Image (tube, rainbow, N blue to C red):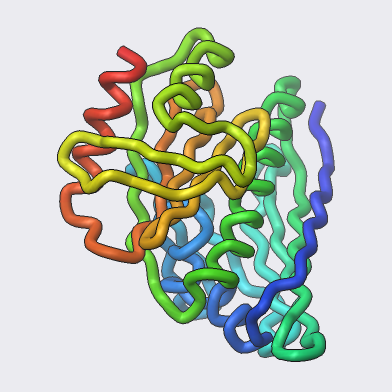
Length: 240
């Protein structure tokens, strides 16, 4: 048993179509809002996350700066994921960007995977909007760290919200992570399994790992030196 899915998302951003195109079709652009690190070479997008490589995604349409699509190879079990971006210029330098993610999830546990995927995609798209609004033209260094396994997710989120002193979009955040400068910002996205915080020099994100740990998956636009070990130690302190 499996499930076909389609997840459309759309927003208007104060960026040009060319700036949107750079964000969704180049490795440094994708690194600044998606997950892990990506490279785009020979019509193939390769993304690494959490020490492993995702399935390569092959570019099928690249009509700059209006439409960009890519799709992973179909696995033996029928699994694949496809991304389509539609970009349309609006008045006064703004642009409508639409991202449609579709594919097939195999197995009897497809519903759990779908919930995790849809929550992650909502966070990633919200991050794309934040990036294009506040950081466009800049390139981030991705930082991804995994905490210990979590057995009680409601409690895990309560702990995180308590550390941040915030939990809803617009809430102000102040956080001290040993080894890093004090983080001050605001929540830009909250989902059932995700949270995003925008600071002056970074986009900080927290995700409920699928059958696993709390994940810190950040985009750092300033100095990223020491960020990984500091976040890993912080997660271990919170959830050990």
